[in-house]
Image (cartoon, rainbow, N blue to C red):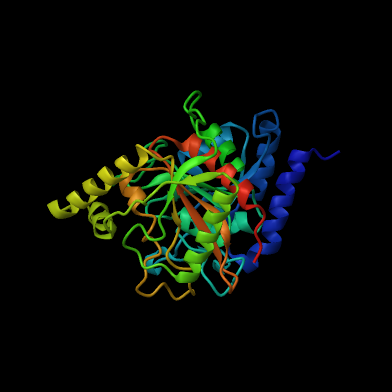
Length: 359
């Protein structure tokens, strides 16, 4: 008789073989290695759960090693942007350019492109990612899945700038809880202290971004639904920030002039003041919907995400709905630094209130 763990791995590998020539989500598939890991994994907590890792070096990441130690089985590495890709907007897999499973003429986002597509298409339940400017949250939003950026420094990261943090893409926030519990050291998960109604604020643009009206409308409807369901209680005012784009670029380049250092410090002050009285900040994940494979033009898809790579706050993308032309939209949830466990608890409540979403 075939063990259910063997069946899960076999089903994942069969789905990848069947669907990846169309989706181009994977760089490499480790069929024989995955099946060989199953006997040892069967008695561990994750019991052979098949998962994917981001990019050619993802198997060496701290998160992947922790998942394997807990009985997870890596089935392959997912696509990331190829050489010369403008602003990391799409991935390049073994079979070609990675496509959005909802709209193949559109990008899945990046740079965790293949990870988002693999989860959205049901090839795996979980895929690792990393987020230096929105690289988990943007593809999660544009592929209609859940994506978590952890608090900066919570998990080891090779990024010397301090901007990037480990993340995960899953079908649900509950599955991300499983990820975080197993990659953190014992006792480090933290209490899930937040419960509804959550004191929150909604900002459609963080005070500076130019947001597509149809994207904003989807997110606003989701926020109204959360209020009606009693999940959130909106506080007066929002949380306007200074545009962090130039400061982010300066930190990434390693030279931060005084005026941009002050932009970063001022945003930190505003966020500290906001989270002193609220549990959750809600925004769209991106100002734009998934664009074509030629690039985003003059609009940065990172406009609403990279502020929190500078500040270090944990943030997540929860599916909010679809634009009239069938593009997924993400609701951005930002919580206090270190409140990753509470953020996931809040995200579970948000998902439950929003319910199943279809175009």
